[in-house]
Amino acid sequence: LTGDDEAVISVAWGLDGDRVYAGSGLRSILAWDLPSDWADTAGTGLSPSHQTTVPDADEPNVVQLALVPDSGLLVAATFGGQAYLLTEDPLRVIEGPLRHENVTFGVAVDDTGNRLAVAAFNRVAVWSTGAERRGRPAREQTIVADAPDVAFTPEGALLTVGPTGRVAHPTPYPPSPG
Image (cartoon, rainbow, N blue to C red):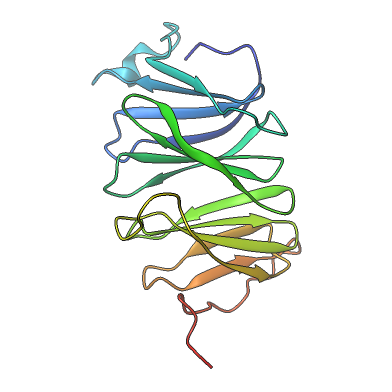
């Protein structure tokens, strides 16, 4: 695959398996629509089908990419603590920046596509991103955690992973009252 002179920092497969996304320096996000025989075309220099940049990013490196299930949306996060929602086709920014207080290390979208978690060095921010939202994604919660990476379990619980590899017990999400 060709298309960017900057180092590729993050990649994500399209949910249908026919597209691959790459985030790089200089705020670039590239997408390649892969032919059905793509494995046989290695070394042929396939050019990107789509390309865009995230606007006004404080830090140019797109360090995390995640697809939102059943939505046609892609999440891109920069090292500088900003997240963006993009449409997959055409590839363009439709929302952002969603700002975080610290350096971004991890991004996760729950299985329903309704929540986005962005992990920084010492906290996790959670936004509503799904069909139930109206307008701009709503920041639901900031969780103080030693969590440079994050994931949602299939049941929707938030799971954090610390820099020493310590996995925090899943936190039901949304949190139970009281």
